[in-house]
Amino acid sequence: MSPALETITLGGGCFWCLEAVYERVRGVAGVESGYANGQASRPSYEQVCGGDTGCAEVVRVRFDPAQVTLRELLEIFFVVHDPTTPNRQGNDVGTQYRSGIYVHDAAQERIAREVVAELNATLGGRVVTEIEPERHYWRAEDYHQHYFANHPGQGYCAFVVTPKVEKFRRTFANRVREA
Image (cartoon, rainbow, N blue to C red):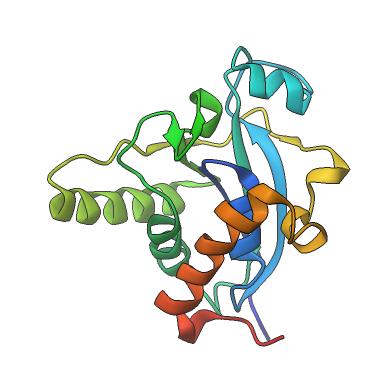
């Protein structure tokens, strides 16, 4: 019998990119795009993009730890986004695009801090990823859910999301969920 599913919340730029990657990871049971760790209540996409809500674009990843560990999920996270640029991923600029690991318990925080420390040792202390408890989470609007799957030819998806999905597939071929 498999243990209960766990949830981790990650912010690494546009949530469409992370959602598209994690939906392809073996052991991930579900991915939901949303907004977290700001002060706004029930913010809209337009409000979050305005940069005044304090919210980050995030994905909540539900996973089976018997199939994929939190460490493995974080290793994927750090390959598919740049953890060294504050409040920016590519052309997406603003606090809503910050790098963050929003934990749900003390064990997750310990693992996240270990992985970030290891990465910092490799990158000379340049990692800016924040590690905080998840707070004030709000599910994004329906049209953001499964965005890449529903709009693979859309410009942003073709030129930004697709390369991240391909990088995941090349780097973690053993983690890719079979179609």
